[in-house]
Length: 370
Image 1: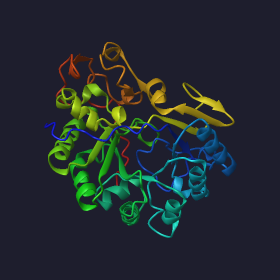
Image 2: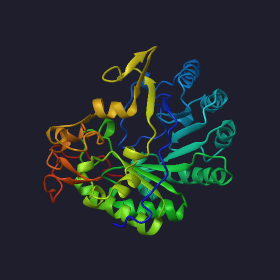
Image 3: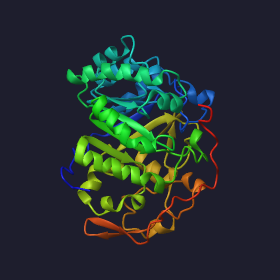
Image 4: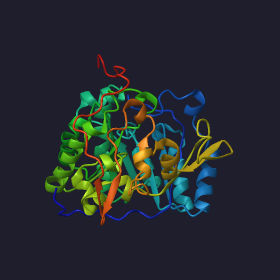
């Protein structure tokens, strides 16, 4: 891998909070970590609670706010929430959305006018057949394409000052298509920011080997994607959710490349979260007034991921968050090894396995008949 142009924009240092509006969604993604939310979890937060949260975090000095779901565009008060955030002085106002609601009507225009400055598009395939199967929504692909065209118009006019990006959950049904997805997003749709996050094996993906592939199976495709971006696309491409020790050797031995592509280590904003407290009243979360609040990076490291024996003796343990706990219910730990620092680079202390480990639990046939 070349280190040519192996640099990216610096991390945004604005303090960021992500507010979950409730887990109601207009998709039924086969990898959704929320699975089947309870009625209480799906219920939208009240407008009064939303206002209080926005005021609380802004009062503590936060300048960046994002709205999450579920699907935030189906929240009845989403335009008012964006407008109130702008009124309070948030300089970065973001939406993580499947955008299916933004391709028709005037919702996207009202959001932009209210002060929306960034949209992260949840899209997981390069074809209608695969996107519709993964989201379990007929027509999802076409709806997203219509929305993307409208969002690109706003971006070109300078109205999305903090950017437009695509976020893909890398899973067992799409990882082999990663190079084709890059070509689709970068060349056909002419987008310039593409992030892939390794599937979190919870909710619909829990104990499903078809949805959660072994890291070892995916790394050759990730390596190919990085080479393609370095030599051809030369856009913003990052990944998240991958333990350092399973990354390709070329990345571990190149600090500039690792800094360019490891999004969760070097690019992501330091983020706090606010979500309805049900199911989040443990670990690092602080519960008050029916809301659970926590730092996302801390929650991943201390509550959601596991650092086992090789991690405790690893020179990268302060950087790497570890492995999703539920991943270890699917696969053994044979893929992982301690790293030793060599200057600003790393080497594994154990050889890599050649073949991906077999899953302890077989797939649940998520897409059969689809």
